[in-house]
Image 1: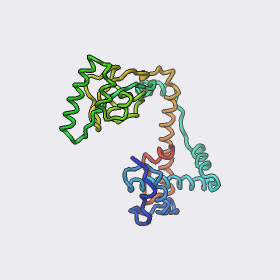
Image 2: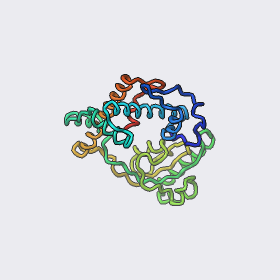
Image 3: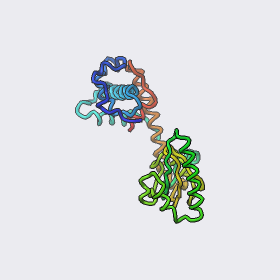
Image 4: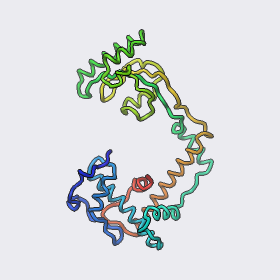
Length: 271
């Protein structure tokens, strides 16, 4: 997913394949949707266009509700819409029993942050080059066998064989937290014990000889330490549900044509 750069958007917004969008008797111009598109992550221009149209529909629904209440929105629209939601959304506070049940069912979500001190040797091979991947895998097994006997040679092997810029530092990647390296390697690292891994790890870039020099965190927290995070998570979920129902009720009452809101519309408004 990526933001659609402004310079790639169609110069003529009317040429885009979108039906006329109306909220009640107010039309949202195609040109306005085109301008909004640059702020929405999407894989294609068409998806960005749809998300932009939905975002503008949501804002127009809220503006029209403010007008019904006689609230002024022109001078400070953001403040007016925020005040509207504060006044009209009914978000129940999670009670202690609900919090404890959620924690017990999702304890793995409430852990101390995991940090790993990692060194690696990248033996590069393209995903579609079977011969190179087989050759580099065999090299990785050879290096690991040698390192199991003489671990101090890791820096030497990194400098000689690694295709990663970290080779200049002996393969050291420093302290990593989840999400800081390529996804397939990241998933594997989180579950490895400390020390030299006994076989090469695959990624889209080739094979990795990996040593985890230190692990910190990653342990489940007791409920007392996680209670505030649990309560915040449950309140956020409740707010999303309440906002979704509120927007769908406005959509049904005021009328929307050209696009339909979905479950993501409320989430985008909360960001």
